[in-house]
Structure formats: structure tokens, C-alpha cells
Length: 228
Image (cartoon, rainbow, N blue to C red; front, top):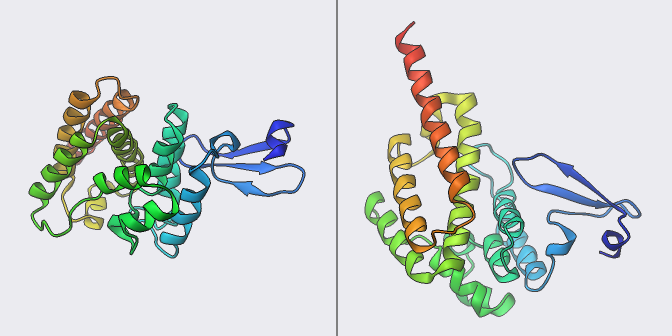
């Protein structure tokens, strides 16, 4: 990381999605800004890579770990503390891997584990609407750290969904366990919850804009289909 202090760092990537930082001296690359690597972020990044090894995203088939990295990057950009950035890196780890809250507490710390646990949907609740409601209630009760990660995750997912929708249209819904109408309905409720718990949440404006853009694109496509 000394290369960053000497300004020997190149930045690459795209506006939407994870960036990459590379040392011009040795070529080593890392997926978050050098300044972001305060404890416990390095430990969380290592654990995230290990936990999500071999997993891919439904929406585009990319390595799954790119999603939590994107969430962590969003959190770092909006000046969240290292504990929150670390929780962003691990926000899906309990839900989608074999890791437990105890594992995360042992390797990254109890504060991070508590946030990740609050962000974990309960798979034992089979009904989609009930599961989403229970999750919102639990995140709201966990406070601003949890709602920050929750909102950053929603923003990253919504951007990915919009990109996939631009290519696949309504067919993109086949990749999920809910229709686009259901997903957008719950997104609206998610936004209301975040706004109520944390009116100053840094992702609210972008989330609202992305949701509006997706709804507008769906309306435009439907009208174009009818006019054929």
C-alpha cells in the first residue's frame, strides 16, 4: 500500500461496478481503494473471497464476490466506517454460504457479525412476502449501520437488474423467485423503511432514481409492444 502514498497507483474499471487499483511498481491489484483497508476490512475481504469461492450471480453469471465488493465500495465512497464496509463485504455470507455469525465474529469481530446477522434473510420463512417483511423489521431494529449496508446492497442489485433488463427485457424475471412487479413492490417498501429509520441515508436518492428509471423503461417497452 506504500505505492498509494507515493501516487504510484493506477485506477481502472467502470462507473457502475467494482473498480480495480493497481500498483504501477509491482503490478499487484486490489478491489478497493488503498485508503479503505483499515481493520477489519482486509480480514473481511479475505473471508468474503473464501466464502463465495466458485459462486456466480444469477443476473449475469459473474463471480459472486464482485457483488459484495461493489457494496463495500459504495459504502466506502459514502464515508461509512470500516466496520460497515467490512459488513458490506460479508452481508450475504451467512445467507448464501456455510459461514455462521460466530465464524465472522471470530475472524472479523463481533460488531461486523452483528450487522451481517441482521442483514441475513430467514430461509425458513418460505412465503416470499412474509420473509421480506420480517427482514425489513429486523434491519430497521438493527439501526443505521445495518440500513446503510441494506440500502447499498439494494442499489447494487438494482443497477445490475437495470443492466440485465436492458438486454433481456421482462425475460430477466425468469432468473428470480419473484416477478419484477413483486420485486419493485418490495423495493418501494424497502425505501420507505430506510427513509423512516435513517432519513439521511446516503443511498436514498440514487435508489429512488434507479427505481424510477426501471419503471419508466418497463412502461416504454410495454407501450412499444402494444403499438406493434
